[in-house]
Length: 287
Figure: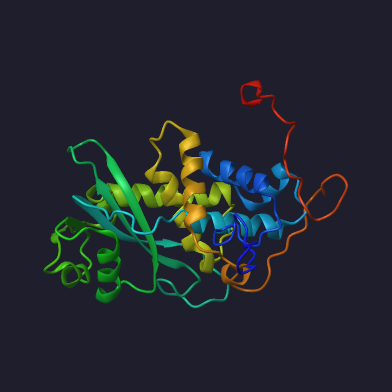
């Protein structure tokens, strides 16, 4: 409390942890599992590992941490960049057909090549889009690809006007079975993302939250060569502290999320333990 104006504040005010009743030690444990595991962690898996009674709490915690994984002002892709669209989601019974009329979601994907030819691929970007028209694709390119870069695309006619005057456009046209050979980067990344969604999250992803999961995949893919798990954990917390508060009603898309745990934690109750251990002896800090 300020002695002059009597205004009250806390160390978590203005961060992703603002007004959270969950202890910070539990937040740190969740951030560690999310950042350091190769395939991430689902809300139900995190609930089981931390012994928490509320699925809704772990679900909201993970979504807040995913929001913090997108760094404001991050560098755009550059050099030679492959760009294509992918369709995520499955067929829904009784829904109309069409490219995205059956509940599937259209996603724009960009993958940059390494500076040295033949050295693999660099960073990637995902963005959920409404359609594959020129204004939509141009907005995606401007937001994620540095001007002057070489953009490699398929034969979709929308890419010509979308890249005109800003990028060097290389257009490749091939029959369907050969598309993955002309643009191997985006097809490989899209396959990895779909496999991750099916493996870690069992494909149970709502369309309204797909962007959040793709942001998590992008964070992990772009740092796949990092040798220090602790640095990834540090990066998530660093961005979480700089991120503005995110309320539950801003996260949830269609009503509260509820799921009863298979086995409740010992002692019942809805609040997790602090995960605090015994005080470590540090004689060098003694007076």
